Length: 167
Image (cartoon, rainbow, N blue to C red; front, side, top):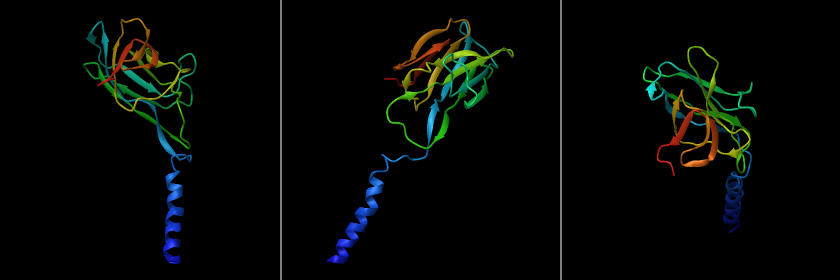
């Protein structure tokens, strides 16, 4: 009986840390900017070969900070692009919402990058783990908007954002 009891105790002793692992800091990769599939237009007509940049860290004025991770692509001949996601290695899990300052910028003809859609760097929330659809019109005025289906995710720019199958 004592051998059986010690096996049970040993099993429980081994299982206890595993059952608590969700509460223990655990190194992992965390999503810091979503995948974006979109198009660049000028009054509805496609714009080819636009330089597009996705960044995962912005300052309060919406500029990319030095320690940001960035991805760059060039739109195809029909103005279509696909970029992201960006993930960062972190040592601990975040409990609750955190600031998620990511941004999509673009440049035509070698001009400086301009905002396509910049999330509000002071807002707390989450990064979507599903593709975001972006329609960016160069002739549009920048407006504040949410990502369709997730209005708590607010940003500013000339792109309108939505999620396929949004809530």
